[in-house]
Each structure stands twice: as structure tokens, then as C-alpha cells.
Amino acid sequence: MPAPKNVVIIGSGPAGLTAALYSARANLNPLVVEGIEAGGQLMLTTMVENFPGHRDGIMGPDLMAEMRAQAQKFGGEIIQGNITKVDLCSQPMAVQTSEASYAARSVIIATGASARLLGLPAERRLMGHGVSTCATCDGYFFRGHEIAVVGGGDSAMEEAVFLTRFATKVTVVHRLRASKIMQDKARSNPKIAWLLSHEVDEIHDTGKGEVTSMVVRSTKTGERQALPVTGVFVAIGHTPNTALFRGQLELDQNGYIITHDGAKTSLPGVFACGDVQDHIYRQAITAAGTGCMAAIDAEHYLDSIPEHLASV
Amino acid sequence: MATENVQTNVQTESQVQKFTDANFDEIVLKSGAPVLVDFWAEWCGPCKRLGPTVDALATEYAGKVTVGKLNVDENPNVSFKFQIRGIPTILIFKGGQVVESVVGLAQKDDLKKVLDKHV
Image (cartoon, rainbow over all chains, first blue to last red; front, side):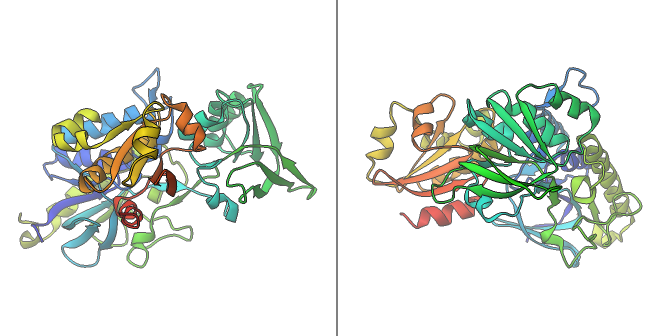
């Protein structure tokens, strides 16, 4: 195995790339393993209007391309690949992709969170055939159709508004918990209909291999009704990508990595940042902020460990 | 992204075919060898992430599998015919028929497993 890296960063969203920028500028020659959802959740968005410094907004993928280039400019090494195994308990630590293994003196985990699904059997079967978790990817295929967005948060509102560019009618199904500004945006759009306090019971038609309708149920009266939609966009939040670390790091009951005193985890030399450890704020800017914290914490850690472990 | 590929691997770029509404029947459906078709679009973030993986497969399977990309924006007929409702979608054709379908971001290893069933 080649010489250990000072810092291996797992994940390449705002948290991972900010950690890369800071640790590169600290001459730590970080290695970033991008992961399968490279660029993170912003790759699935359109206009980002709340990242400071971009007063006219910036497209999510453009923002990520900028962050990536900035990290590379200072010497951050970014490789494609997905981590399949980690050993955080040995020293140096070991991380493996399907193609290579790396030794690491410190590890920054920025694996983020992925879209959560409803858990209906039909949902997976019809993914890509009418069921979607990515409005910006798939909205295009529903020009002139009636579709539904399942979810009541800010991202569900954003998706619903975006999808009205294509669909003739977008029904939002769920309980509403979006911020006022996003609700107002959606409510002022005449193509959006509302079925609040409803849950999805069924999605049809797995036999045909495409979405033809869905059945929703009122959480108040229990009454069921069928909606004739050809698309179902699921936007009900996210789950942290921590399966790799289970049993090695302390996680909370929902699977998020528990951090303390900055970006420290339950193991020395292992730091976490971004949505993988944050179920409250979950913003690009907070992810970037904690990415910076993780890099600085890793730098302090590397300064503190004995010379024979630190020497390159 | 295209420039990145050119810089790192000129050969890779040339292995990947560009499928269109016009050439699809000829190159894909009438092909004797298996054909991998990557349905993508400029505005699809995950598609852009999958692009380099498809490039790499084109090189690795050169001579065994025809690998190419189809822009759904520019080629609505093929996309409609095969009921593409989400991208990225990878379809594998053999003898003019769809034999495999992979929806969403996929890892290279998983795509190789799927491809290996048909070469």
C-alpha cells in the first residue's frame, strides 16, 4: 500500500469540497473520493439563491463546479470512485474503493444524505418509469402531463414550482412544513393543487411498467381517492449515508454521525461535516462551514499526533 | 466535461458513439454486437456524473460492446419510443431488443456485471 495520505475526504458536496479547499491550503495534500453522488444534492437543484456572494443566484451544478475547481487549484486531489469499505480503528486508517486502497492518517466524512423513498414496493419498480426523486432530471419527460409531488418541505415546494414548467397540473401531497417564502411561491402558482394531510397508499401500475395513477388517503378522515397522474416526484427528505461507518463510529438513532467540539467524532482523527452529521440546518452554506471546521480540526489533529505517525 | 476527457484520454472520447434519432435504427437496432445506450441531457447533473463511467466502459469493452450516448433533448423520438421517463437511464440492446435497463446513477462495477451477462 502506498504511503498514507494526511487527509482522505469522503464525499464531494459543499462540505467535502470546502474541507478539501482548507486542507489543501494548509499543505495537507488532501485526497477527495467523490462518491457516486458526486457534487452532492446541489447537483440536482436549479437556481441557488441563498449562497452568500451570489446575489443574482447561481445554478447548483455551476456552484459545485466552482468549488471543485477551487479545491483543485490549491492542490486538492479529487478522484472518481465510491468507498466500499473503511477501517477507522487501525492506524493509519484504511479506505477502499472498488479500484484502489488508501491509507490515511485522518479521515473527513462528508458523505451527505440521499433522498428518502416512501417505502412502497411499486415505488422502486417504477423508478425511472414515472417515479422520480429528481425534478430537474426528469421533469422534462412530463410535458403536458398531470403529476404529483409527495412532500411538504422547502425542496418539495421548489420541485413543484419547477415542474409547472412542464406539467399542466402538479398536485402536492403531504403535510406542509415548508418555510413561508417557499409556500408563498408555490401557493401563487395556479398550476399547483394541494392535497394536504394526505399520504400515499399506492402507486400504479407495475403491470404496465409505468405510472398511471396513485391512491392517496386523508390522514384526517381515512378517505381514499385515486389521482390520475403519470409522474410521482418523491421529496420527503433525506437519510444520512452512514452505512459504511456503522459499528465504527457513534451514530444517533436516525443514523447521523454524532459530532462534538467542532467536527470531531467518537474516534480520534475522524471528522464529519455537512448533512451526514446535521439533520437540522442542512444548507449548502452550513455544510461548507462545517467542512471548513473539519479541515481545521484535522490539521490540529495531525499537528498533535506523534512524529513517527506524522512523517510523510 | 468534454474538455476534461480530451485532456486525460483522447482515445476514450473516440470510442463513445453519438446516437441520434437519425442513426439509432442503423447503429443500435441492427447491430450484431450488444449496444449500451446512455440517455442523458445537458441539464441533468447525475447524467454528467455518469458520463465518465460510460466513457471508461467504452474503452474497456472496445470491440465487444458498442457504447454510446443519446441526448434526449435533441432526440425526442428514440426517447419517446423507449418510454424514457427519467435520466440517466442506460439501456442495453441485443439483437434490436432491450435486454437490460439501469435507471439512475450506477457504479461502474455494477454496470460491468450487467454488461458481462451479454458479451
